[in-house]
Length: 94
Image (cartoon, rainbow, N blue to C red; front, side, top):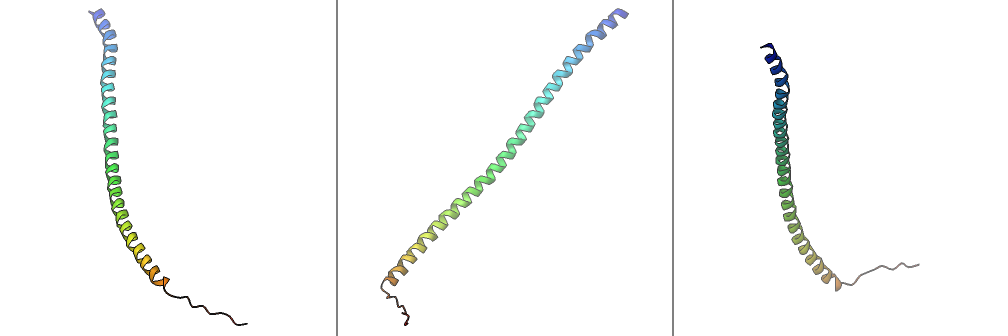
């Protein structure tokens, strides 16, 4: 009986080692997947913020372009008015 207990002791040590290695391997994989999912969630949130910022900036660009067009028209109109005005300059007498 003592021999069986000794043999069982020698056999159980590697078996428990393998079982614990498999269990730890699964936990490592699960932890890795959890970390990856957290990274994906963080990147998705940041991407959403950046997309919103791009959309807002595009709207601002459109608004500034229309404002720029209006100012160009106004400058052209003022230049046309000034084209008919004679420049008065004072000459220096020596």
